[in-house]
Amino acid sequence: MATQLIDEAVTQGSSKTRACEVVGISVRTLQRWSHQTDDGRKDRQQNPQNKLSDEERHAVIACCNTPAHQSLSPKQIVPRLADHGEYLASESTFYRILKDEQQLNRRGREANAVQREKPAEHKASGPGEVLSWDITYLRSPIRGSFYYLYLFMDLFSRRIVGWEVFNEESSESAAVLLQKISLKERLRAGLTVLHSDNGSPMKGASMLATMQRLGVVPSFSRPSVSNDNAFSEALFKTMKYVPSYPEQPFGSIEEAREWVNRFVLWYNQEHRHSELQYVTPEQRHQGQDVEILAKRKQVYEAAKARNPSRWSGNTRNWQPVKSVTLNPKNHHEKEVKLAA
Image 1 (cartoon, rainbow, N blue to C red):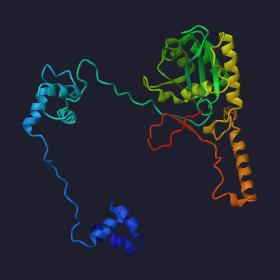
Image 2 (image 1 turned 90 degrees about the horizontal axis):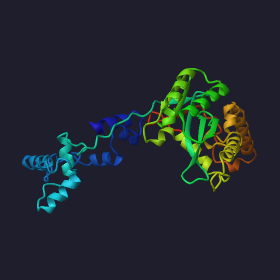
Image 3 (image 1 turned 30 degrees about the vertical axis):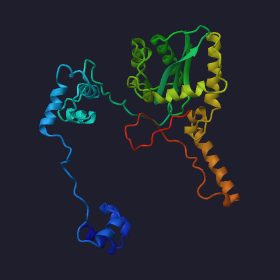
Image 4 (image 1 turned 60 degrees about the vertical axis):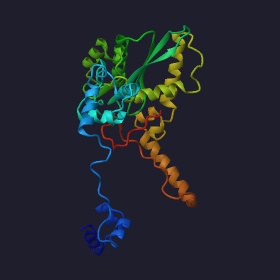
């Protein structure tokens, strides 16, 4: 049937290679079939010779359910049996049988791992739609004591929209800072999402009450999953790896604030962001990136016109980034790279 379908497709103008791809075979297989009466493929053996008998399977299950073994994993059970001169099956066979019997769970008092769903997807197509924030440590002169940098960023432009350095982690301090940001950035009630991790300042009563009053929609990462808040993590990495970041601890909280202020000015107004087609966060936030990237395209097109031999194809893509997605659900969607 396959060869007949391929012959009909080739007669109607299709290539033999494409027809074979549709059927699910290679051209070499088609050539081999043309010289023999059957396809020559071996049937799969449904019952392997080393398959355990019913009695052996029952012995494995009974062994796992004995009082001495009911709290142990197969990796612990099999060596113990060997120490007593007994072998029933391999560890992988133990696991396979327990799975078939729906007994493959955490053995002992440890609770089963909780499967937590990925946070909801949020897409930012303009400033003020999705914000992300987190807290990072800044070293102080006292060993074991730190200053705490609260940093809020706009995902669409990567612009730092608010920051402050405090002596402690506090939901009240975060709430005051969020209120200042809401006034300065003119956040619209019900249209702004604020994403963070699950720290106590993020989920404290003062912070949640302020978000509800301002109409800011909360979004939280899964516990112990840093990738859910990767934009803020990437920003902190950029901050702590710039050449100007001090090697020694900050002498005082005022000194830490002065340095962070200089960094924020540089990051927002001078730093060309790799995921924004190398425009600054401030240019992106103000909508200037479209004109800047259009001029760059003209420069490249003019360079190509002057010396076409240096260009093997199209010029560099300077199209503006249309939107940024936080925690995309679709596996096939190209995820935004987070290098800052």
